[in-house]
Image 1 (cartoon, rainbow, N blue to C red):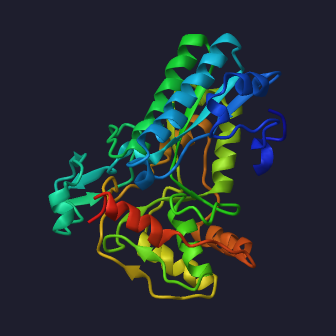
Image 2 (cartoon, helix red, strand yellow):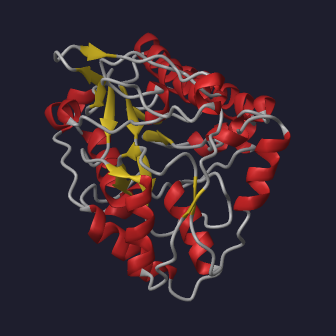
Length: 327
């Protein structure tokens, strides 16, 4: 990989691999020829879809990563950076009233059916890397596979490796017609079609939305800074926002302020609150988020002008309901 690490487009590789290619030894061998470093971003994404496409997600994410690592074992590179995910945490970290740290269990089907969204007596706080994994979906499980397999193989074969746990990444060039590629893209698809954003639960669940430009900088820095080698690090904005607030922000900047459709429904595998503590990434690789949410949403809105999107949100919701994965 070549380029100026100060530029966001530094991560444009000489050869791009897609989902099918990551399991093709020949394609991997050709892609790795003459390559100095590898940034592994290939994955099937989406919590809901992973719950009924188990074979595909496991094949692309887990087996695909194993195939890449097998090739790297025979031709080591200078550096490997792998994109992990905040989904590996499941629920984020919480504090009890007495200040104790609490890692709550997954919400049960019965709780969700009763619309008991929150954990009484607990306050969500920024989630650090020491929080134990809570793998509440097949997607989360396979992303943890990618992370751990890369770190284990990297250590075994002497390849300095860093895993970056990306929080909710958004920005220009998102796939707008895929209802599993991120809530901002989903909201944008609805708004572009004159329809209100569709929100699960009560819309007060909190997430951390990080600009793709900050993510690109983190990836580029991790390639060059050896202090992160062997670590899994959070990459987020370090701030949280409710899903309902997010819908309002996007609607305002695109000039389509439609009241969101708050369904009160829940999806199996969803979590309530999770947002990043970025102190470890700041210490290890000097990561500092630079794009505020309002600025990033405005940039996304500017890119959306004149674009079209196929709204498949209702179709995806019906599929989840048909399979008993929502309530």
